[in-house]
Length: 304
Image 1 (cartoon, rainbow, N blue to C red):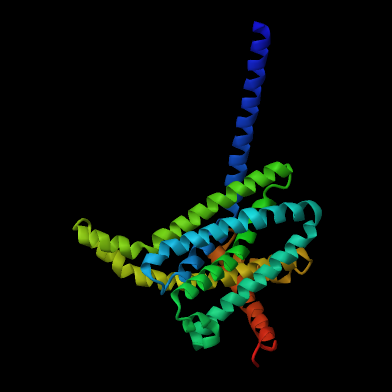
Image 2 (image 1 turned 120 degrees about the horizontal axis):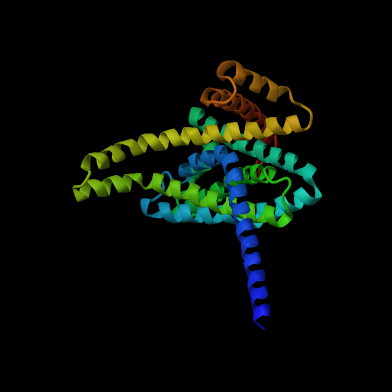
């Protein structure tokens, strides 16, 4: 009886060790995959604050929470199973689907640029909405739609780091990456959009008044910078997806030109090299976005 109990305890210990090793493997794989997706994560954090600008301050955090929940739904309920199914059954379909998403991001970025430079009312229909609830619903919907594309890129990058892993390991790692990145992104966004309230609270409390005033002065500038960075992010991420997709289909010219320029100016790696790559991808994003905008202009709209 004692021998049987000892054998059982040995089996339990062995299973525990195996489980611990699996957890370690998941952690390592998730960290590696999350690091690879860091660029898109930064873009996501830059894009999102623009969706709460102009809305009531007391609704900022609830709106960010709604977008965060929508982002989790995108990653865990839509993208994770879709990525696993496509990876197992139709791996060739992942690239063209991502390219369509890249074209959509490019279109969104160009629309925002057109509005910034021309004031085109059609580019910002939200300005015509007077009902706060309707405006909030529109902003949340737009943010979640954009997040779907950025999240798809994040999940695709993470999946590409797991080619030799089993299906269950891929699923667990993608879930860990998705949840971790969502918490990090929308936690940072929540802090950004409430910086002015934090500054005001510091001033009123009499503690760190200089810091509080600095935050109050910096907030409008930061939001304007993030608005431009968010628009640029849509263009360089969208353009980058398309460039990489074209290379995957044997049309490697654009990727070679951008990479060659990046190496010539900034060498291999480093900020300058990344900046040149982002600019090159952004040019492609603008070109694709203009084409999409032009094509949509040809589509008759209701009432016309």
